[in-house]
Amino acid sequence: MTILKIPIFAPDSKFIRLWEILIVFITVYNAFLIPFRISFEKRFYGIWILLDLIGDVILIADIFLRFHLGYFEHGEYVEDKKKIAQRYFYKLLRRHLIASFPGDLIARILLPNSLFIIGLCRCPRLLRLPQFYRIFNRWETNINIEPTLIRMCKLIIFIALITHWVACGWFLIGSWESNFGESWLINKSLKSVGTRTQYINCLYWAITTLTTVGYGDITPTTEIEIIFTLMVMFLGISMYAYTIGNVSSLISNLDAAQARYREKLHQIKTYMRENKISPKLQKKIRDYYQYKWIENRDIRDYYIVEELPHPLKTKLALQLHKEVIEKVPIFQGSTSHFVEEIVIALKPEIVPPNEYIIREGNLGNEMYFIKRGLVQVFSEKTGSIYRTMEAGTFFGEISLVYEKRRTASIITLTYCELFILYKNDFKKVLEHYPDFAAHVKKIAKERYKLENKE
Image (cartoon, rainbow, N blue to C red; front, side, top):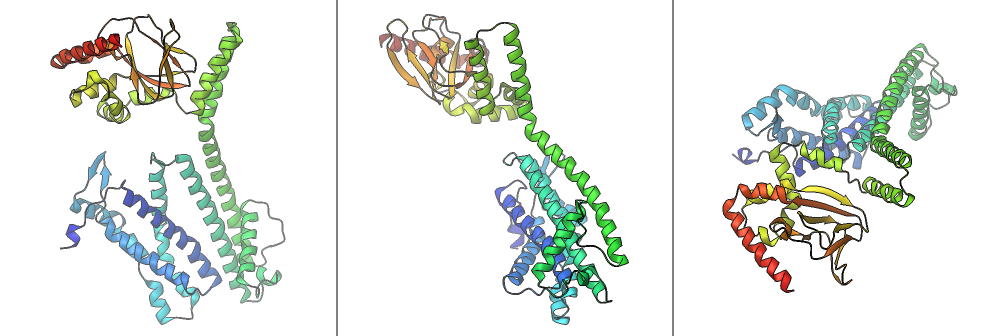
């Protein structure tokens, strides 16, 4: 009865993310330690035995967890326990059961001195390696983690594993051949030295052979060693091509945005030079694009948002702007649907420092919301500074209702990221809410009278 009460976990929940990190750690731990134990027949004590047991228990727990792990199919979230169980049974259950079989514990009891057999009995744990790659592939699509960083980590682990396995295989063959009187281990006088020295020499040989450098100080002696060396060299060629391809892709992805920026800046410089734009204005324009690059704010991002389906676009816009929209007096008392339509109508704009947003005496046709930056409100006629406004504030709302001239000027003190609500867009929204339109006009009228008195 208790099992039935276990909830269904969403695959993108925080708990599952942390659980996946644990599974990755255990899988990589086994992938490194198991080949090492088989090859070097090293007896492990204390903390290593404890880590083995903890890892094995977690892998068994993972089997039970997967019966309560929802999944996405054709874009739909499935949390039906029967469907989850059927899917897991036909896809991964048998492999995971084999991977968790405690063969090494049985071997420890029956053959306590055969370290080679005990190590071999842990090999089924390596059946979890495909899960390691599936988890990393999922992480690449996680918006909270840089995909390039994930791919880089996956590539580094892949190269490290291959190199480690080759090193272990090289020692295993040398150790086996030593029983018949001749091997690379005997030639290098490494048969009786410590495990650390043996492993370092094996790792050195693996790296030099995989990278086709091959200094020739450690060479194969027997036919089996020569065959293994040839196989490693062919593997090295394939791995070299795979690594170069992946690294090139990673570098191009890292540099793609910078390349676009340089190309855009080059086009702008050429345009300004051909049209004999003044050096002062050229500098302002260059500084503007540099700001957009450094802050990673580009109007292109706005068009990416525009490509989203309406429900997602609305949710995103609400999360970005709802709080400041609800502060506007003329919008207070509005319905949630009204606020949704207002936030969708907002348009982004970046304004450099010391630029006028509003000029005193001009007719107003829009209101502004400050997302980032500082602006100063002042009178050009008298020189009086009224106030400084910052992120989360707004101005110009009266212009949405009345065709009145601006009573003050507003200039940017820093780079400002603004969202603009134009009068025409506001009117279109009000057409769907005629009852609220009267309320808006009433509030705006009261605000306008109050401002004139001040």
